[in-house]
Every structure is written in C-alpha cells, then in structure tokens.
Amino acid sequence: MSQANETVRIDPSDGLPALKAGRWAVDEKHALLRNYVGICSATRRQFEPPPAWKAGTSYIDPYCGPGRIWVGQKNGPITFHDGSPLVAVKEAIAKQSAFMSVRIGDLEPTFVEATRQRLSSLAPDLRTEVGTAEETILKLTEGLNPKGLHFALLDPFGLAQLSFSIIEHLAKLPRIDLVIHVSAQDLQRNLEFFLDRSNSSLDQFAPGWRERLKPGTADTQRRQIFDHWLDLMRQTGLTHSKGITHVRADKNQSLYWLVHASRHPLGNAFWGKIENISPQAGLGF
Ligand SMILES: C[S@@+](CC[C@H](N)C(=O)[O-])C[C@H]1O[C@@H](n2cnc3c(N)ncnc32)[C@H](O)[C@@H]1O
Image: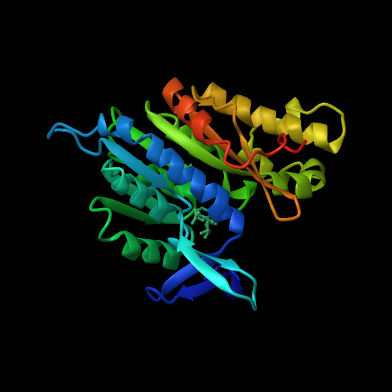
C-alpha cells in the first residue's frame, strides 16, 4: 500500500480500510458534496431515461479513496465517516435521484476494492479502475451518454496528481459539473521549487503557467498561477462558479480551494446557494 501505514485504519463497522482525514473533510468537503448532490436532485431526475438511454446520470470519482475516512489524533479518540463516493451515492439515493452509473478509481488497489465492496448494494451500475486519474479517466467515462447529466469530484492530495488533461477530457461531456480540490498548501509550500525547476508537476497542472507569470510577491505569483488555471478551465467551455470555497485547517492555515465548474448557469447557481458553508475570508492570497 502506497500510503504510510498510520494513515490507514480498519473501520470496525465493516472490517475494511479507512483513510485519515482532517475534520474539515467532513465539515466542509463532504458537507458541500452532500449539499450539491442534494440540491441537484430535481435536475437529475429530469435525466432519468426513457428505456433506450444508458447512463442518463453519473457520478465520477477518480480519487475515490477507500470509501471511509477516519478523523482524530493518533492516540486520541477517533471517528469514522463516509468518504466521498459513499457520501455522494447515499445522498442521491436519499433524494430519490440515484446516479444511474457510478465510476470510481484510485491509484491504490485496496482502496478501489474497499469502495467497490461498500458500494456493492448501493450502485448497481458500478465501474472501477485502478491507476492514476490521468490514466483511468478515459475508461471511467467510457460509454457515458453525452446527453446525460454527469458530475465528477476531483479530490487529489496535491497538484502533482491533478493533470489538466483530466479536466480537458471531462469537459468534452456536454453536461458535466465538476467540484475540484486544488491544493493551496502545495502552491504555497512549493512555489520556489516550481519556479526553480524548468520541469515540474505544475506544468501538467496548469500548462503555460510560466509564460503567464509576472514579477511580484509570492502571493501575487500564486494568484497568477491560480488565475491562469481558472482561465484554462474557461477555455474548455466550463465556467467556474464565483464562490470558491477556501478550506483552512484548525490554526487557519490554508489547505485547499474547492472550485465548482459547470457549463450550465443552473449548476453555478446551485453551487452559489450552498458553497458558503463556513464563511472564509478570501482566497488566502
Ligand atoms: C484526498 S484522498 C481522496 C479522498 C476521497 N475523495 C474522500 O473524500 O473520501 C486522495 C486519494 O487519491 C489517491 N491517489 C493518489 N495519487 C493518485 C493519482 N495520481 N490518481 C488517482 N488517485 C490517486 C490516494 O490513494 C487517495 O485515496
């Protein structure tokens, strides 16, 4: 298993692995995910198919984790919670608008298997792939109805795993909504490294960023890189929502932004209604 052992624990409720996460994963990321899946339920129902359709709606999670997370201190009390694929799928079912197809992937095979088991009774049309999201995204989207309504959560650990090609590929679906975890921490900690190297993971995350960069403070340059990434997304035809959630840790350190993007104004309007889950001051630049 690629994760350090102490990040993975067995959830006693089902004997399968759970991945360590901060409390903000539950309070903010998963709460937003649940609310967004919930608020889109009436729209999703409009895509429930006449019999000839296949996969009228889908949920795509190429960094799915094991399907459960644990929160707490190493030697203190810990709590187990659903991970993103379980949060999304259960909420859709609860709102009588289950995703017709669920597509999950992860680099870690045991995580994919754990999520597969946990979803087995909840997602009859479940496709799983093991590998980097860059590799699996083609298979995960294979056979999806271009007229369907699709929703993807991109939730990597850092920028190095978020190649822009993944977004470009998903943006080819005419009706796709995305929620993307963009690591602010990575950009903050590694800016100097990125600037010093002629070749770095930032070139995959935001191709062309270097040409866009003007002299300035570290904060200004981080802002320029983030703005460049948002521009790249606009060029694919997706519009990012104005409300970008800035998730911070307990001591107010910047962790990540949750960026919502859609082609349809309704998706952006829905996000606007739910994104202000814990008012954050600015994007942290
Ligand atoms: C932040 S965790 C995902 C948590 C999950 N979305 C949730 O909320 O329950 C990131 C996941 O990405 C996986 N991963 C790491 N590198 C990856 C890559 N290049 N492609 C796909 N998955 C990757 C890790 O194994 C880990 O499960």
